[in-house]
Image 1: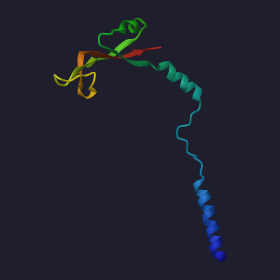
Image 2: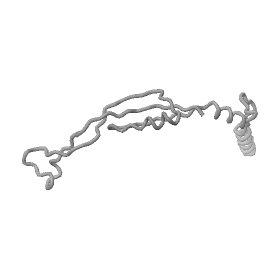
Image 3: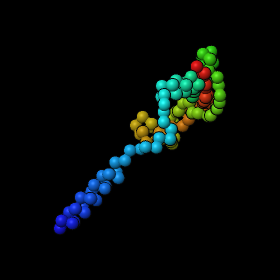
Image 4: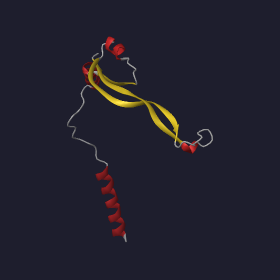
Length: 118
């Protein structure tokens, strides 16, 4: 009985010793973290994505502020919807189930990827 008790204590001690190791090998130590943060901020460029839909256009405001267009995309987008009756004898005021929503006006959505250097 004593041997089993001693053996279990040894196993428990070994378990704790092997599971609580500290990392000795630091392959990439950070010597001066403040300097590396400042270097990254100086070389970093600001990027922004903006969207204008259905005839809106405010890109000139950004271009005047010094932003440069990196990428421009255009997609079709539904600007407004309208409700129409599903059948001729449908009363949309009384029966909401016979209402169909259809696209009314279709326009373009422009997506710009902008970049600005500090």
